Amino acid sequence: MSVSSTSGDGGLRQLFAAFARHEYWLLGENRLAAGREKKAQVWVRAEIQAEFGRRGLNAVAQGLFLSWNNRPFATARQLLAELAVEWTPAKTV
Image 1 (cartoon, rainbow, N blue to C red):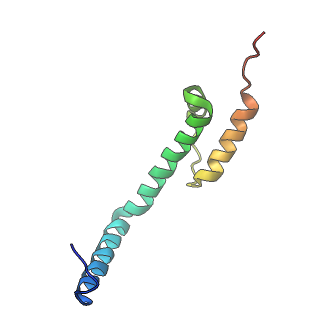
Image 2: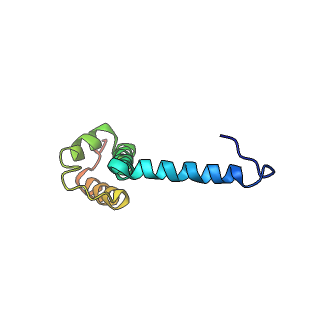
Image 3: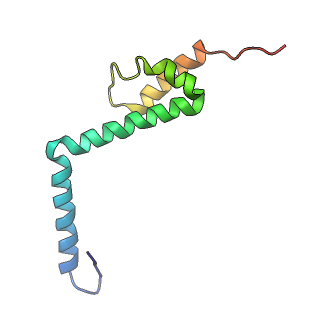
């Protein structure tokens, strides 16, 4: 679809109609919420892995999504704080 500001408002009507159809499709069968939840879970996993690596991710993965509340930032903060308390690097002598 191409839209130009010089072609009158017909192109913009088509564009907004396409937005409306896409929104209707996203809301159907809970696609929007499911997609957001999946992205949030992927983000939390990536955040844990970036901070504590594969072992940290494996440590929290056992209970990571047992009580998932779709609040990825709060979940990540809580898990990172718990891991930081439980995990201390070995001292080198």
